[in-house]
Length: 287
Image 1 (cartoon, one colour):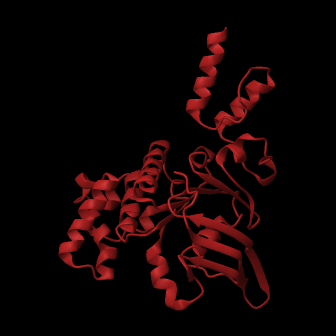
Image 2 (image 1 turned 120 degrees about the vertical axis):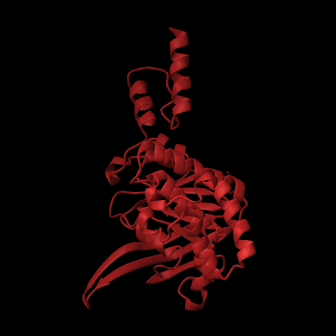
Image 3 (image 1 turned 90 degrees about the horizontal axis):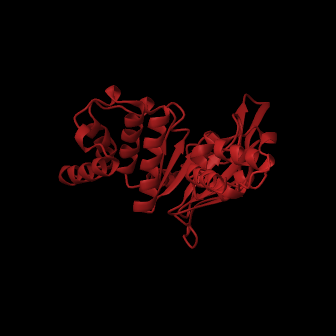
């Protein structure tokens, strides 16, 4: 989905965050970030371990407030305590380990948990639960115990629980890193569906480049700052030296470049498997 023309939902303005350990030790994790996240866009954030991605994510819903600059969510500065409740309803978080977010004995009770805290009437709550479980593909599992589900299913339950709160943005912090390839595909398809159908902003923090290429926009985070902010083809396919900051290009891009270096007529900016297969088919048809 193209976010062009959509208003900025989350804005970082020279925002930074420094962890303080004791009175003298300071560890800057995020430094002077300027970044806008728009309604309806699927934004991927990538970076090596320790680059500050998770700190940046927590700044999006006031789990951390900036120690310099500002972060504004839907017009609300995150450093004003009176805004925190509304900010966390606007921006939902899904973390790496879904088990840490699951607190109830059945799937439907898990989805109901946040609604109960909001004081949603019981009659209305049932409608919300039915709609969300259907949308996430969990309608037949509503009586199941979350802890007996697969990793991908648990993560979808966590997404459903956040979605029931009707956020305008979901931030997923390495939410697929503990899943197998099938589970990662399952969660990614769910997220892309939500972005498209609900006009949700989705911030997808990942170290899998094959996931990042499916986003509308990719932010490369390095040493606490934005190194690159562009469309996937620009980030991965146009020769940017990601090796210097500890990142790989997607496998299909590496293969395309390698074939080009061997003299084959293959576009070195390919980022999607479908494009790569089409390029190989064209090569075969010429031989």
